Image (tube, rainbow, N blue to C red; front, top):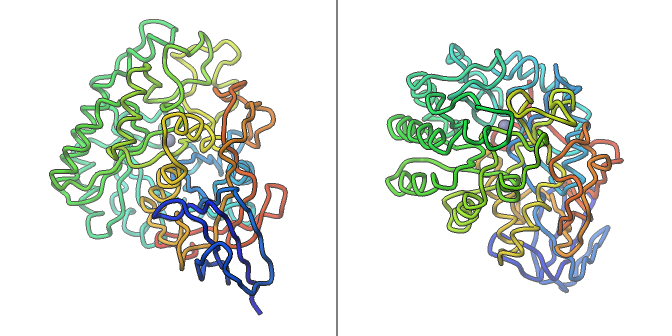
Length: 445
Ligand SMILES: [Zn+2]
């Protein structure tokens, strides 16, 4: 006989907004939503009172790096960190691991590496690189969510960028599937070598116009192919109007930004602190303002971590050089708290947080059972205390490496209890995450 559960909260965050409700769960799915105090028969009952209940968060942009660079981050550490942050699904990026996920064999290697050690559900993006056009269809058939590509050097020889024509050809082949092409949008023609070791010189070397020119190229490819394009880690707030205009003209285009672009500003990056280095860079405060505005008016659809750690030696810490340090910010576990810390001050609601960090990423990833508290959806929940404050200590986070630009920062909002498929889980429990394919079924290779 199947186990049943009822969770009650006076602040349940549904797609329609926050309300008092009770969710009934059977066979890992939500089977009913009723009034908070409606009588119910269940094997277990949880009453959260005034503690808000959100859908389990979905992080659609995580570099796990396993197999091949497990010393940077791995499935066990990344998924435990995600769980501790209230994230119940992560989508792994196709690069930084070895092999990169550009063939079905590589996807098999990934899935084999991940199997049995994931504390949350995991799904996989494929990679589009020059010459792997014939692999895209088989990768989709095998269960990848869609594809990621670069238009500029990724920093890794095994993941080269696409040219304009290669981008168009790859997107054309995706058009019928509805799967998105995720694009790292910086135009190499607008990027220069930094003139010095300072953070300002690094930002100046990767200006907003580099993002703009690349996004224009993506819009052209999306318009001509009819495929869906998605701009990853948008850092240039002034590109939001361009994205909005393309969408208004009927182009299938979405965009994400990241917690670090919404929280930090270039003015406050201390010299030598290369844990702040990522590409595109964290820009100036006026730009951060534009990003918040774009998130508020919907030009930016969602927020994902782009968690991309590496060993501290590759950052050159403690006294790093922004010209040579490896780029990538470590934040998976604290992303929701980072975003909520600022969002609440700006008058946004937990409903906004759930839309940005659960509903949209799930939709992007083609995981219809994720991202919302609704009848038929997977019973993934996080009880999130919106007033709990804590100080970030990298050494206490469950990421493989402690270096994080949030070290010592006080954040507000914290995941306090988490359910995966209707089962309450903690990072120290045996892992019960599954490997998922596009559409939400199990990945079977
Ligand atoms: Zn990334």
